[in-house]
Image 1 (cartoon, rainbow, N blue to C red):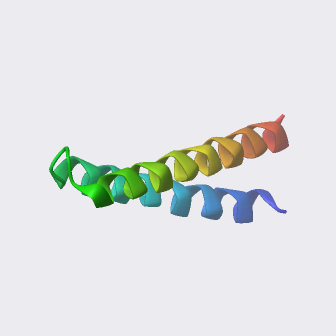
Image 2: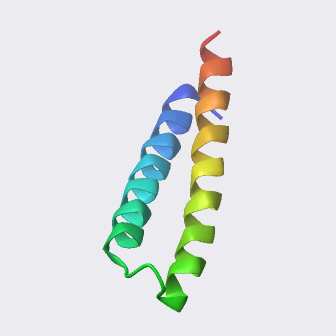
Length: 60
């Protein structure tokens, strides 16, 4: 994957994490759907971190 493509994917991933963080913050603490969103957020953060590492590795 090119640097440009990695950067674009990282940008999308960062936006997804921000979107999920906002949704989780707006939900009541005991809402049953919150647990699912928190799992999605954890996965999105892992993907973001993976892409960030790949981009950093590609730059080196």
